[in-house]
Picture 1 (cartoon, rainbow, N blue to C red):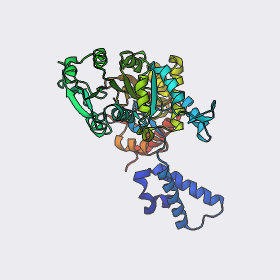
Picture 2 (spheres, rainbow, N blue to C red):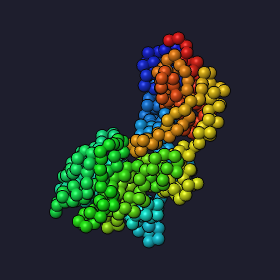
Picture 3 (cartoon, helix red, strand yellow):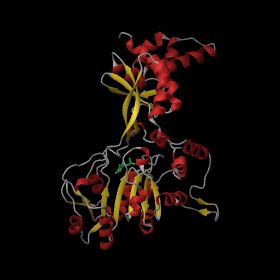
Picture 4 (tube, rainbow, N blue to C red):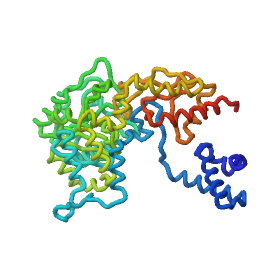
Length: 442
Ligand SMILES: *Cc1c(COP(=O)(O)O)cnc(C)c1O
């Protein structure tokens, strides 16, 4: 075994795949060879291990344990699905479905019919449809309503959301002309009013998800904006991004504008993600006035942006969880938000008892996902003092399963709010093993 791991043909993969995974692959290959009574050639074993490593490489993405405390971590796949959503996917995955089939008439049906109904009920909107992500939702809206026309946006909302999604660029790509109004810190409804022209396609309000302008600021109220749109006969579109369906203040976080509030304020259309505060699969939702959703549905671009049956199954199950607070905690996101400090401290005890040097400390968890920049949530972390915190964190990341932790003041911190209680045992045993590794010299 040692010889295989040190073999340069194998060791070359260590930085990419991690020693742990390579070791397991080697154990598997050697075990199988023993079972067949065919331990034979060393080179054949090495070749088999290399094949196994190739398999591992194409199987990405793989599960990781999120101990960062960032609940909607975009790099770690945002919202974990509820077991309801996972079951809905499993139920549908290996079978045919009525995806675009109306069982009553025996004819072609609409892919969005059932989910549209569920979204209407959840948001209070007249109609809704689902596309691949929120960026696609914004693109579809702009392409349908504003191609070759003008879109009026407040200057303080010309934001980059992250991952290269910049409002001005998306506008340009959709063939709309951006009309900026106001100044960086102060924007008035009169600025919008003066910018209206026969060329105006829509008024756009975006969620300044990831930054905040403070001090001498002014913004028109959303009601003033929708009233202006109504007087002018121009749609007012709000890109909400995070798509909360309930008041986050109930969970001790800052209030985040909800989809229902935006619809209630008279927004003609709103766009939001499926995998942020909705706690569901990657998707983008457009909800709002039926006559405009109908126009979106007729846009040929929708064909390229539509979602598959597995996404619809997961989204439907997720929406069912939003019926009331108790059902909502079926969603891992809301379970994590609802976890009490006492509950987290209780879980911390097992770590402190079993992991040498481990201590519990106060920590700040975040909702993340580009939303709620100020939404810091008090949390509890396990702190592991280490001579080489970077090496310990790297060993945890490349272990199996991979564990992603934070480093703060020379300690490795594992925030328990984003670690599922079912994962505690695995994390504890990894910490025991890696902790020993990290204090070894070299
Ligand atoms: C996150 C976000 C988006 C992009 O959403 P995706 O689902 O990742 O495409 C767009 N607009 C706002 C305001 C966002 O917060």
